[in-house]
Amino acid sequence: MGDLLGVAVLGAGHMGADHIRRLDQVVSGARVAAVADPDIERAKEAAAGLTGVTVHTDHLAALDAPGVTAVLVASPGPAHEEALLACFARGLPVLCEKPMVPDSAGALRVVEAEAALGRRLAQIGFMRRYDAEYRRLKALLDGGRLGRPLMLHCTHRNVSSPDHFTSAMLVNSSVSHEIDAARWLLGQELTAVTVLRPAPSSDAPEGLIDPQFVLLESERGALVDVEVFVNSGFGYQVRCEAVCERGSARIGDEHTMVVTTRGGAAEEVAQDYLVRFAGAYDREVQAWVDATRRGEVTGPGVWDGYAASAVAEAGVRSLETGGRVAVDLAPRPRPR
Image (cartoon, rainbow, N blue to C red; front, side):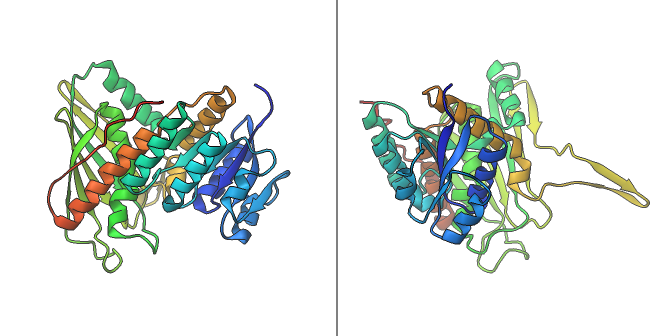
C-alpha cells in the first residue's frame, strides 16, 4: 500500500477539528500533513500535538505544502468550489464535506471541471451512506423483499441552531442529508419540493422558521417527507421509515443505555451529530483513505453533490414562495 497518505485538512472548526482527530487517532493509512484555517490560532489548536504538520491561513498554501497527497475539505460551504477546483488543477484526490457547493450553478461548474479531467478525484461527504443502520436499510430495499418503496418518512432534529443559522439553512444545510439519503435509498432523482411552514416553535430564535415540513417527489412516484426541527431543545435525532408495497422498515430508534433509579427511568439521547454518526464518519474517512491509496475514488461523487444542491435550491424557493417548485437538473456531462 505504500507510505501513509498525507492529508491537508482545510477548515479547523467543529467538523475539521474532528476530522483531524480522526485521521490522527482512528483511521489507519493516513496522517495529517497540513491544516489551513483563516483563524491561525484555531488551526494551531487543531494541529497541536501532531508532528510533521504545517499550519496555514491560506488553503492554497496548504495544498502545496510538503507531503500533501490528498485533501479533506471541511471549510464553510461557500469556500468549497475554489478548493475543489484547486485540487483538480493539482490532481489531488479530495474528500469534501457537504454541501459540495451551496448553489447549484457553482456545483455544476465542479461537475463539469471533473468531467473535463476524464477521471474522478472527488468524494462528497454524505456520511449517512456509511452509517450501519442506513446501509442495512439500503440493502433491504435493494433486495426487493418489501417490494417497491412508496414513501420515506424522515425526522431530523437538533438540540439548538447556531447563531448564524437562517431559515434557508434548515433546507440547504440540514435537509441536504435527507435529500442525498432519499436519492440513494430510492435509486431515483428527486423532481419537486414543497416546504410547509408550521407556526414556529417559541424556542426558535426570532425570525427563524423552525420547524419546517419538507415534501420531496421522486421521478418514479415515491414521496419523501422530512420534519426538520433544529431547536428541539432535547437532543439530536435522525430517523427514517421506508413504507413499501409489502412491508415497512424503520431506522434511527435509539438503542442506548437506559438508567433506572427510584421514581423513574431515563434514556440517553445523543446531543450532537458527531456523536450519533461517529461510526459513519469513521467508516467514511477510512474508506476514502483506503480507496485513495489504491488509486481509486469511491462513494458519493460530484453529481450527487450537485443534485443535492439543486434540490435544496428548489426547496429554498418553495420556502420563500409557499408553493411547489420543480427541480431543474442539468444534463449529466460525460467524462471527456
